[in-house]
Amino acid sequence: MDLRIGGSSELPLDLEAVTKDLRSPDPAAYPELAGYSREQLYHDCCGGGALYLAARMVRTMTLRPSDIVLDLGCGKGETSIFLARHYGVQVIAVDLWTPATFLHDKLVARGYRERIVPLNLDVTGRLPFAEEYFDAAFCMNSFSFYGGSIDFLRHLLPHLKRGGQLCIGSEVLSDEFKAEQLRNPPPVYSFRLPPPNEAVDVFEDDFKKQHTPRWWEELFERSGLLEVEQCHELEDAGVLYEDLVRYEHEFGVDPFDVQISLQQIEWGKTSRPRKSLFTLAARKL
Picture 1: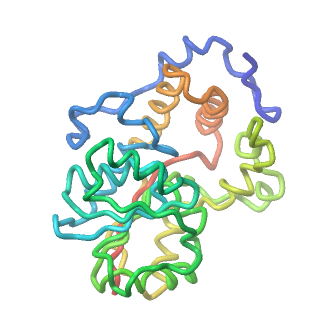
Picture 2: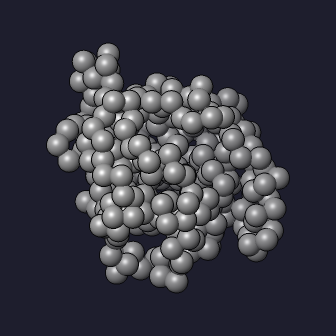
């Protein structure tokens, strides 16, 4: 198997040898996930961190069983189920790409039909919620695609109660791209997906919209709408990325992502920006 992406250096071809040396997180550091199987931690979770990132996000929040929580960009619903299961909250699960019927069928099968309401809508358009309806908003691995502006915060926050929390967690960069890198992106971040998604330009549609934790903190502070309570890069982000790659290889989930992720991990050992993960928790003023 050729692991060269866009002309980057070739990695060893023996995937078994490469992936067996990848690290895994310490289970003791994630007591919220005790009892989860390896597949349950990653199944139907999109982006880096999976339920490990969800657990880190929720630690920054104060949730009560009576709360109504907006799960923004919920994907295939695993974060919504995580919130309802562990914290007893009512969840409004919103996603653009996942059909509400798919989410409904999953929630019925998993026993969460009464706790989670699935909606299929574009969060950049009109939001069908009352003002100050939500006690908290939770957004994992999607905010960078649409939320990187003060205008979007002004669009979203009227639906969050005063004093309510907005928590985001996602893939992030260790450094901002330099001007030359924006003109000529590093090959490990600039590529096309395999068919049938070959039209997707990953740099323009994804990595170019990612920033450092400090960039996000400053955006939230400049809005004048939020008080940032904490914002930091996860100290075990590299381990979580490695564990995801090993999972994908072992379960045959996404061979292309295994290849490019190995390239990104190797590249990030000596170059910047490297991929990382972060959490940010802010409270509405």
